[in-house]
Length: 107
Image (cartoon, rainbow, N blue to C red; front, side):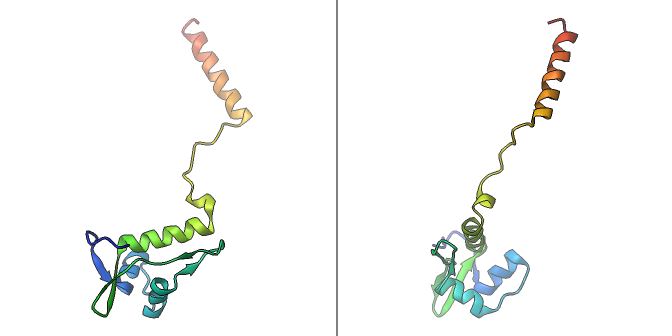
């Protein structure tokens, strides 16, 4: 749900501010009404609030919507990148460098 602490904007304006591309109003309206069907069969909807007959959303809601789509489509992309384990060659080079350093200080 859109928080009232967030700056509310018309649907297409919020999407344009996040993507830099103007979207058709009916496309963004469908995102709020029907959402996007994920490969797992779930629906992701763009959060909005109504003010009279107008639908408003926020830049943050649009970002959350896109992030949820990305996480559903590419689970690996949503995972934080961790430091890779060194290769055998890289580990051997690190061990050799550590041994040289120990020898240089007399241990």
